Amino acid sequence: QVQLVESGGGLVQAGGSLRLSCAASGSTFRFNTMGWYRQAPGKQRELVASITSGGSIYSVDSVKGRFTISRDNAKNTVYLQMNSLKPEDTAVYYCNAIVLGRSRWSWGQGTQVTVSS
Image (cartoon, rainbow, N blue to C red; front, side, top):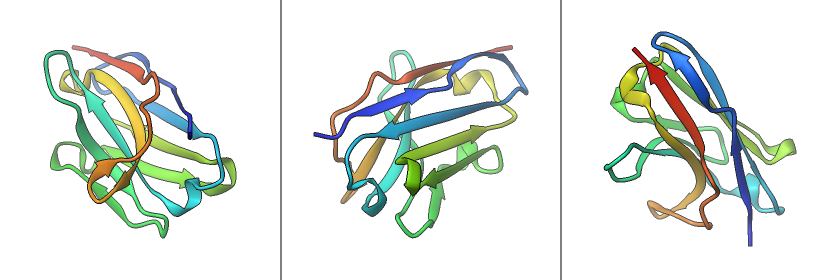
């Protein structure tokens, strides 16, 4: 079973930046579409951005122009660069592989992002 370890979260003021990392164990990382999700208190987990094995990128409208997803297959790692952060970006952020629109692996512990106004 693949293990996912997210890191890089923290407390930042509005307008600030953070770079999240997600390291995956195993040898199948490079073949999978990877996504970053977030879950705010009292809300459902939502997909924020994804990147295919070939590098095609998708992001939700609320983060376009602010968040950038990237991956390093040699390191089995996917990143999320978050700029111009807003208080509404406050959430626990998770990564996972995506297959047919669904998460594929067990969830990691996530990394908390808190944006103060």
